[in-house]
Length: 147
Image (cartoon, rainbow, N blue to C red; front, side, top):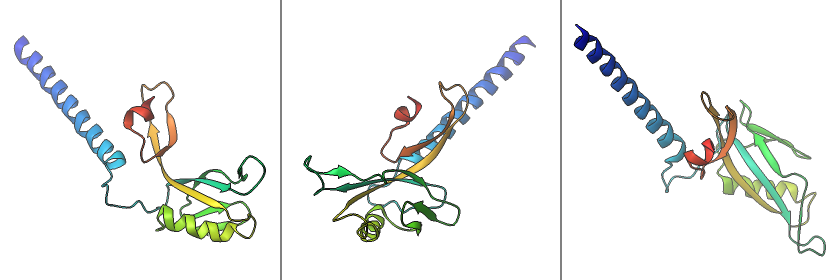
């Protein structure tokens, strides 16, 4: 009878291990296994990183405009930007959104260079040094996220 009890415990441990491997594999593939040919489009619940640069401002060859930051996309697909109020970003690619924002910010900044990077929200729960929700670039690896 003792052998049968140990065998049951081992079977449960192996199943638990395999389930965890499958879960981590699915999460890793869905977050970081983007097809190189596919272009990321912004969706509700994601976020974006905005950087605006004015190349002709000041003697240092350029200056950062104070609109840089990470912006969450709300449930309607909009982002609230300084000066512009709400802008619909859902279904835009980073390039098309950067071009649209460049046009809109041109009213306030002379010849702006606009860089938009997609971010996703990832939640770490459990035995991590700092569990919580983080905004992560699509290029980040799983190990960078955990670190």
